Image (cartoon, rainbow, N blue to C red; front, side, top):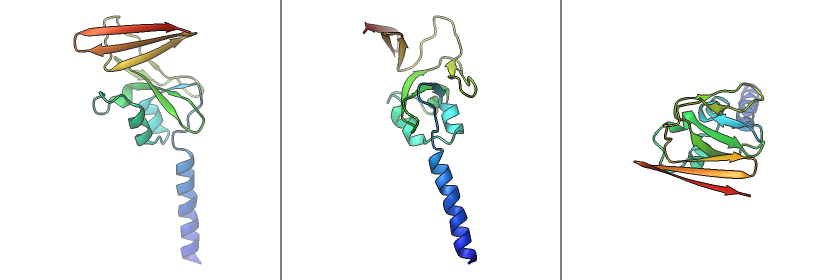
Length: 131
């Protein structure tokens, strides 16, 4: 009787942990550190990051939640800090000087405009597409 109770409790905790993995709200933006704090799946974060990212850069990177089941998309690496916007609000990158050059690439959407910036050692290339 005791063993079955222990197994039942362990199963309950395991299922609760799996159900809360990357429990994000579709349409909101999340810092990587926030996703980890929510019980996020590190493999999902790693697979969303660009391959040129440095170790632990995900902690101050911004992700968009694409579904309530936890599908995420990398948006950008913040130049300074990624700020937690609070419950029900998007996280965001701390505003910085215009000379900041994030690593890898960043995707920005404004209305129907998509802007992609790619930083390479000494040059930045920006491509803007209007839908």
